[in-house]
Amino acid sequence: MLAIVSVGMGLGQLGLMRWIEGRFPRGTAVGIEAAVFLSYAGLVLWLLWRLQHHKHVGAPRCPQCGTALEGASERIAAATGRCDFCGGQVVA
Image (tube, rainbow, N blue to C red; front, top):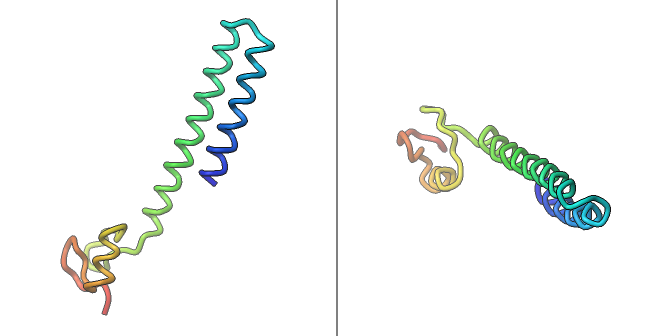
């Protein structure tokens, strides 16, 4: 969803800016373009935050310490069977 929104709206924004420049005086066009860009950037940042949040919430946790096993921690736990933070048994 993040990729679709960021690329699709980014291209749409370029077309909108070109249309705005032809229809409005320079000062008004810049103000509208700035508002559109800031809205677009805010939406993309919110979607990025949401993606990271859901990755963190959905990550498996160590039964001993409760640390989220993400990225390298998840791979280490899968390979060794132990949490890399507390050393507790994660996989039997």
